[in-house]
Length: 286
Image 1 (tube, rainbow, N blue to C red):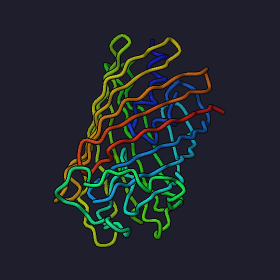
Image 2 (tube, rainbow, N blue to C red):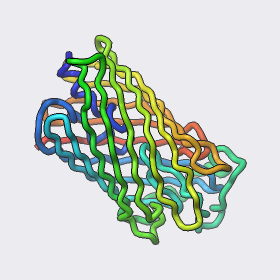
Image 3 (cartoon, rainbow, N blue to C red):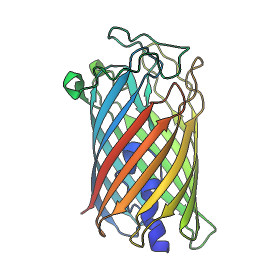
Image 4 (tube, one colour):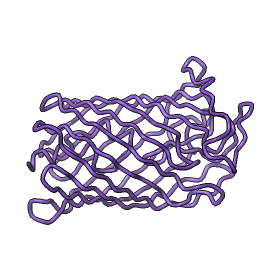
């Protein structure tokens, strides 16, 4: 059963929808490289009066050696409105006004007033390179010798996105979190707590949020395929807006010892979160 637990990392460390699709087998006991790709669609009214949709195509690479893992990825982003950044698990608005007509900030409305899906076609979207993200994870305690697994996870966002695209803040972000995992037969209980130092875009003063999450997973096959329900939230980032929070459901299908497919659907629970996010990904061990 421990071998199955090790394959569950697709839903374990830094439960972020863009990373989930590229982290199968992170602690499977094997050393080496893994290539990953995923496609994500996210949309919502957010704090604006106009509905915004983003399409993200991620490319990632991971190196694992013993208890230490390093993982980096960068997305190509197509968006029909500017004024967003990727922060940890979620796509969130930067608090800057949209440049398009009808894109003013909307303080009093949950998920915006105009939920029309007009202008969501990728043909009408601006395409640009996003920010580069680098994550590390170190297994401090393992469940074989202790009552649970304990991970420490530093991360950094490099502002590689073009300033004209307004898909990022143009600033570095730094984060640190800790995750615990407890197995009970074929079930796994997950919890995490962390902190993000957000880079402030021009004219915006972010509050640096604490992050927390909790989830319940279950293995659905002897090969290591699994399902997870996960809740994730920040504390408040801007005074006038609700903290970002969302709930996600993920499926991980092990095709064989080197390949895995993953599917994730998320629902935002506040006006500072996307209405929805769906993604699908593929991982291949070299």
